[in-house]
Length: 249
Image 1: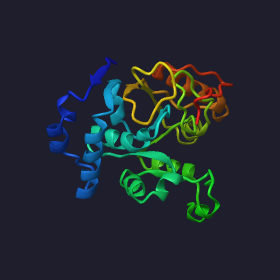
Image 2: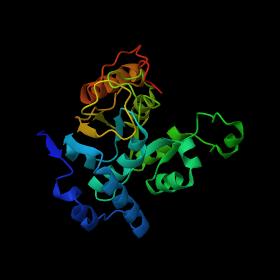
Image 3: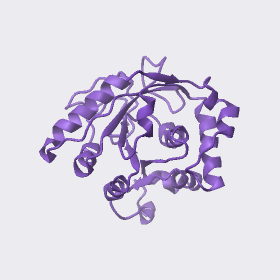
């Protein structure tokens, strides 16, 4: 499939393009306003989107990408929703973010799936820790025809050259549901030495989809295929025993 490219100079990501776009699958005005407001912010940091843009329209599927800063969790759900005419991609997000009232509201409007596996360092805040399995929620949404997204590295990795080893959650979901994986590489043009900051500009490179494995015992090999594809698209190296270097955090 021929690659396509979208930049903030494209008509849909200008001020007029953002606010005039019909987001037909967002029924509430407040949801449309939040999505468009975040896209207006995103056009200042996302300098280019290239690759298989048409694949973003498919449902259900599992989007996977490298994770280097906090803006990704905030902006990418809105950008993908915008490009999909209001159909959300349900991102997995750390429950720590929901402790900030404004961020909690944005996450809920974006349809986030809250991950509560990691306890907070401040003990008394753990009383607000949600219960339940994020993977069960993600599996239910996939089986209901929706798409989800997660960062297989499992945490922010600010190293500009190397990916973390990663976790097998995306491969597990693919094996359980039969949904394809859509890998996306996030590049940071101009960053040659780390660490990657929260406000560095980014470029998104959308790759071809990876079909779900037919054999559940292929979980590890499918995880390796996912991380290898993210490595190619992000321009970062990856090894099964990778630790991500000193800028992992």
